[in-house]
Image 1 (spheres, helix red, strand yellow):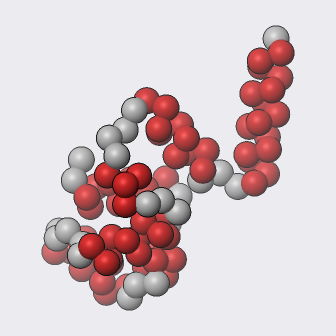
Image 2: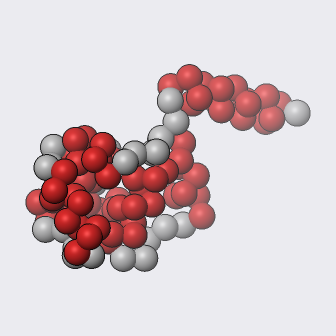
Image 3: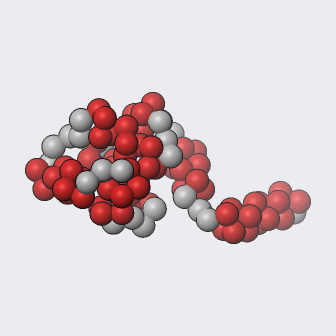
Length: 96
């Protein structure tokens, strides 16, 4: 998976539009739109800003995924209410 594909996966997991990603990253909409239209990789400073918006480090962005990593990443995107519900479900399942 290349850098743009990974950004797209992270963005879509959160239900973010390209413009919302730009806003969260503190970038102009044209900067982020140009990545997609020109299919170019972002500068390091741009990628840092995007990672910051996602709440991950550059190391986490480039880390090879294991099976558990996707689960952890998805849990991080849940609302506090949904996290509490998931924790309650897991607690009940482990008691069975």
